[in-house]
Every structure is written in C-alpha cells, then in structure tokens.
Image (cartoon, rainbow, N blue to C red):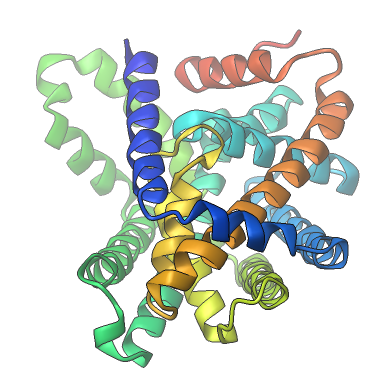
Length: 347
C-alpha cells in the first residue's frame, strides 16, 4: 500500500505537469524549432553534460570519507552512474537508495549512515539552487516573475535553509534531536520497541552528517558542487543559444535552478512533464509567451531527451559493472528493502 501510494502520487504529479505543458504548446512552431537543432549543438551540450556527470559523481567521496568509506575511483563513478539513472527513471526518487545499497553490500558502513551522506548531498544541492533561484528573483524586475514563481522562490529558500539548520542541530545535539523527533510521533508512549529501533537508525543516519565537522572534506565537496551546477547551467545556456532562445547566462541559471526545485518534489517516472514544466515556467520570466510555447517547448524537449539518453545509457553500462546480471528493477527493489531492514542481501 505504501508503494502504491507513492506511485499514485508520482503519476498524479506527472499527469498534472503534462497537462500544464500541453495546454501551452504550439505544436507546428515547436516541431519547426526542433528540426533546426543541429548535431553540433547536441554534441556540445553532451560534452558539458559529461563534465557535469563527473563532478556530480566524484564529489560523493568527500561525504563518504568521514564515515570511514573508501571506494576505488572506477567503482565510485559506476555506482553513482547507476544511482543517477535510477533517480531519473524511477518514480518518487525510489532510486535514491541504490548508491547506499551498493556501498553497504560491499561491507562498508551501515545503510542508515550512508543514507545520511545522501541527505547532506540533497540538502546542499537544494540550498545552492534555491539560493541561486532566489537571488535571480531579487535581481530581476519583480513584474516579470509570476505569483507562482515568487512563491516558489521564497518557499524553496526557506525550506532548504530550514533543512540545513536541522542538519546542524542534529549533528550538534543528536540525542535531543532524536528525542524531539520521536516525541512528535508519540511512538515512545505507544510502541517503545519500535521507537528504540527507529532511534538507532536515526543515530546512524546522523553519523552520515559527519562531513559538516570536517572542513578538509567539506570544502572540496562544496567546490565540486558549485562546479557541478556551474557547468550544468553553462551547458543549458549554450544549448539555448543554439536553439535561438535569446536568454542571458543568468536567465539560464535561474531556469536551471527553478527546474531543480520542481524535480526535487515527488517526481514522475523519467521526470516526464515535471522537467518540462520547470523549464517553461523558468523561461516565462524572461521570454514572451509566444517564444516559450514554441522555441521554449522545443528546448525543454531537447534538454530532457539528451539528459535521459545520457544518464540511462551510462547507467545501463555501469549496472553491468557493479550489478552483474541484476536488472534495474531487482536493484531498486532490493535497495528499498535494505532501507526497511538495514541489512542488504547479497545475490
């Protein structure tokens, strides 16, 4: 029932976003714009995507080191690539557990502790893009940002700032944080045994926040995160210009940031509709509606298609390296089971 609920939420989100995108589409103009997309532009954007992929994967090692986990460079990149593919392909980010699953299955650390590093990564990413989005909103003419965009700018920056404060508090006052969190659920009163098990998992999860006390690893992680998002935004700007979208570099980064906020919500399979809605809403703050419904639609489709082919292609190759004969479905199922039990099985 829990999985059914997640999938229903995912499909509902996807359907809503697809409806939003389609009702603003100018099909003849969009297809005309897509036909103008050249091979050079695709290859150039793919090259920036490869650099983005590298920084996104490589930085994880700096979060793993403080909890005593060390991975060979090839295995780090392979595990990360499979995880990126699964996050994109699976609904409601069910693929998030794959990277910790492969690490723990190799005998290093606990599932909860490695999940803690993923939580830090996600919150730092969210904070970076929400600050970028909020800064773009403050620097622009307020009249160009619609009410939903203004609300999203405030909500995202406040939300991720709150999560960052939670990380710091949990690391500084671990037992107090656990006690307050469990107290809000009333589990200690009605089910002490379950509360004790959850408290143990929370302690392990918070161990994954150790990089926040380790400047030697935290600073390289933050630097590579900035490089990751920087190359990503620059690549989006290059492709936009190749597709006759006259936007500035700052507008491309604002669009990237807003799209990142949108897809951080419970995502549809493949981010279909959700990714496109984020791009279109971001572009709407900088371009006329007629351009967004034609060239903007073509741009969103091209971005999504290139990213999907890249991440799925690289992910499937790397799945053979780290998963052997296992299918993606098996890996996702086992990784989610490992989160529940805390002990991943080894085929």
